[in-house]
Length: 389
Ligand SMILES: Cc1ncc(COP(=O)(O)O)c(C=O)c1O
Image (cartoon, rainbow, N blue to C red; front, side):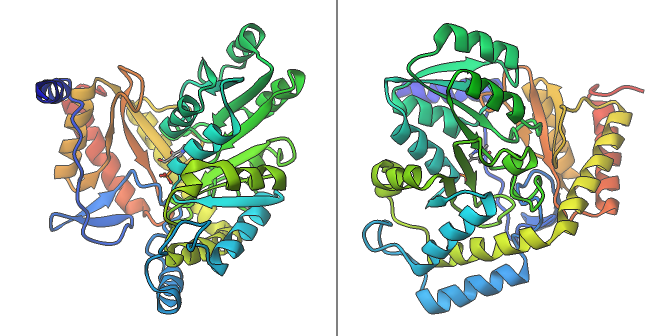
């Protein structure tokens, strides 16, 4: 086991060592970390619903009615009437015939792709797709062809070369570490041209994009064209779990074949109740959606003006590219001393030399808080030579 010690010290030397920061309050725009009030930047709680009293109330009611644990997997004893309601609700929200809930977004991706595809398939995968998509592809045994990030010429070139009998194009809707949106229109055109299936992971699109906040696919008006819509209940929806939405026969097939669905204890009923209520709130609360986008546009403009390099983001995910992993950690640590938690994201989560602070905003952040953040970012950005002037 000596290699573990060696590997750990290599990870530390390269500035890639990771540790948890422990929060001892509710997940909001400010949190308590080791007794200090800290402005939280980097949570996926985009609409600020994680501590919403209406969601806490339904969770408590569900606990009072159903207790705390689910006691079994969904196909044995862990399915509740709430599960059925949630799956029907997700299908309406996403505009599909049916849906199926998994215990996490990660488990959904791994379970969907490995059940639908096998060695006879070729999967075309954006280079920046989430790790859970990649893991699903690997587990499926399919041939994996990775195309350059959002580069449709590269995708078509690779389709021409590697296309097999059964083909899937899979992409994040909103890229989790970059905040940009996949060119779904063009992906659908290519899929039609070459008769391929399509799958979109909309973990970060839901709550933020689309007319009723239902995500990227509705933003592009492509509900009929995308075969598999996958998403999470853990980000804007402020709960936990993942789902797949699509045609009824696909969902029935996944219910019967997806191993991460079949062989795992179901989510507690209170989490299901929270997801159900949160979807209602998201659909109605246009102002929250607008607020987080307004804040993000303003914040981004300020940082750009100060000289920071920001990705081509159109969402509340605002990555500030630093490049060097150690410098990124240094900036993150200095900000924490100032009462700001902006996580440093490094390889292997992002490509080498593109380490970044992944800032993400919530509808509950205030302009005052963000002005303070900008001021401190400028001070430490200059000290570390990230920006000049
Ligand atoms: C694009 C994307 N897909 C899937 C997941 C996994 O979802 P979950 O956190 O619900 O397991 C994430 C979350 O980190 C994600 O960013």
